[in-house]
Image (cartoon, rainbow, N blue to C red; front, side, top):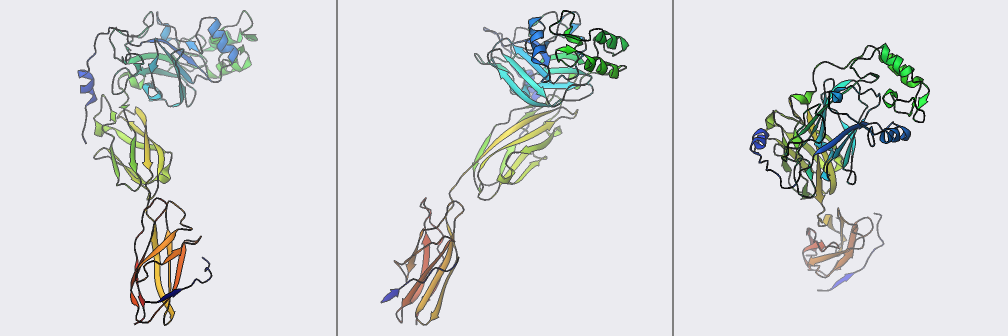
Length: 449
């Protein structure tokens, strides 16, 4: 067989768990070392001036905020500030605590949301920042000492010893045995300078009488500085004037007779183009009062929606179903909310990692044509979702075994050969990527008979 070839110029180219049973069976061992306790609860505002915060600290009213006094019903006194948006809790020792460990419920607002969280492992103070300032409400703080993922100390892993009787005389919390939620009541009524649960003209007069005082003057009273600016002025007493007649709401905080769900949602990893992933949310969320199927589950956000062709919740089987987008890989954080029948909820973040998998190149549009009797033109196109195929070598086999063509910038390749008479048969092509993955092998018939 005699073969001659030359090149032309390139062409353009389920299961269910009852958390009540879990907690009732939970072993609460007597401690040989101390479990962490709560030793202080404070409120604060990101709008308070540094002079005001420093004044509170220097007058033993709280570090970084205003410490809620306890004993003799002092805990029940309404807080008068109009911009409270932070809850600060100090622990007796270094702990593992997260934003979701605190539930804040009210009589007017079933459950409050937080926009930020921080923990200082030197002072043992955790700070929750609310999405909006507190208005008049009766509030209940509930810190997780029980359930799937309670607050624990970092030395021994003991759960928070949180039991608390409202208006107890002294901190700390607890009964000497690890475990137990910390439930702490407080009231907020902006403008209530007398802290008696109703804003009246006497509150206005009281604030007005301290006008033009500040943290640097002797007559200054911190609780009459309604906005925490460090000075009592028209902004403060004008606000109180506008609130005359308001009072704390009737009823009790939603969490007083109902616990919010708890969560223990782990991350998940799988490779690109894997089958749909079914993740049990019944296993990840628990509630003391409601069964798994009685909770409402909602996908709140997805940090990388392009990673998935669909994200759905199968409510009948309690599963989150993730279907990844073809050839997509990367990470995403999906936030899921579980809400109980009384409107209390917990948000959980699922971290998803979709690993990259190399795909073999694909040869498409492979064709063999002849313009005159013995001149054959073989063309095709190489695609690869992972790499640029420019410069790769396409190998020919069969009747054209040993021939090669180079992939151009647009992915095309071309081979022109002249066949001797009576040379005919099948030829096929393959190309390997830089990872040694081999393509498909399309076949064409060439030859002169």
